[in-house]
Length: 353
Image (cartoon, rainbow, N blue to C red; front, side, top):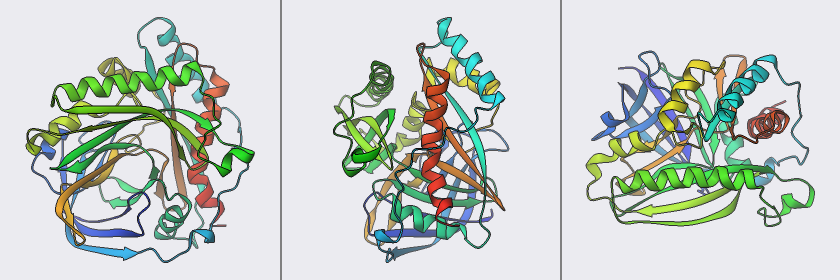
């Protein structure tokens, strides 16, 4: 048992929630059945990298008072950067597996380090993220087991309560530039590669849900904006015969092909054996699980995939991003996609200078 905290703000909310409490470690998603609290889960659960549940001792709802005009997104394109040798080696290795037919899709992630302005605290970065990214789920989590993580993510893993549930298939990425930044991505034309990648994720989620319920509906795909990026998104709504199996459902869903690949187990095993950057809690999930707060006393769940995130480590911020590879993927394009995704966190650090 140890002290930990989490702050989170749901998309478009005018307030955020602060939680402090002790932690509980779990070795599997299925052990979440019957739990309540704020959850942070890694991509790969290990003894030294467990699922952590913050069991609330204090819960406070705080109104967001800083106007969104305090900070603004720049419309500068993400820097192309110098492709690292480790990324080149990983891409070549992963892409060769696709060409050989081992996977229909596999996700390659990487990490970049940025200096942390010591005059700015993690809570300040959280508040800036709330202002800059109203469409996203924003969370700042610190536990002795995981370290300190900040995320601004658009991807729902599981959201709802006993009255109904939802999840999404989110894949495909394009960067908005110029006049496109004034809208929601209406003028974007999606490539065959992006459409195929999103369909792979949606099909997988539908197959998972069929194991738990016959009552689900899929809508989409549609274009949705997240910071200076847009994605393709399909929405799934469903009911469950019982809420006692939420951990089992999470075990089936996580990790989705959006952060892993297909076939899921083979892609997962290949990633943990061959990816040169340990993901840790990047591409896991986090959020309140079966938890009550003052204005919503009925237990509810809001779990999001931990994308667009950074690990705050004293004077360094470790930024993580990944991209889905298909057989026709091009290394330079995939590198630029990860740069564009990292820009979500870099924007916070630029404003702290």
